[in-house]
Amino acid sequence: MTRDIRERFGQFTYGGIEFEVHRLALNYDQVEMWRPPENPAKESDSRFEAYAAEFGESSWELDAVEPATLADLVREQINDLIDWEVWDKIEAQELAYKAELEELAKKY
Image (cartoon, rainbow, N blue to C red; front, side, top):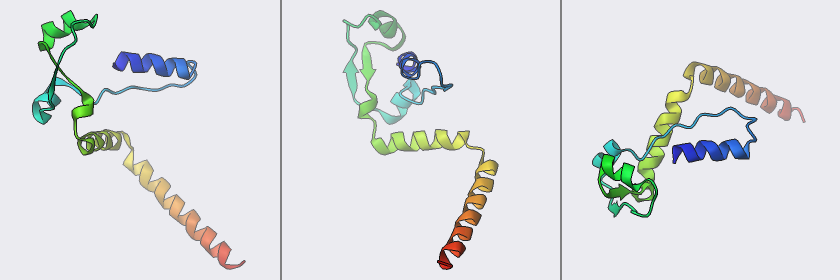
């Protein structure tokens, strides 16, 4: 799935945008922790043999994980990527611009 997403983004952006895809879920540790309901793996899938050899004949759907759990996971990963020092500087600048605009607006 991760590879498929990379390929599709490449097609949609015509290769003109740099991006990274980080797989966040669903991995086996998360399956053990969150215990989503099992689905039998599809034997008709061309990847079944390799999948079954590694994980057995059960599979799990990301859709079965609580939305709040996924939102927390995404939020945590995004927060890890933010340079908070830069964020704080930009936020302070934004507040200064906002105050300046409010003062200008009072004159009209």
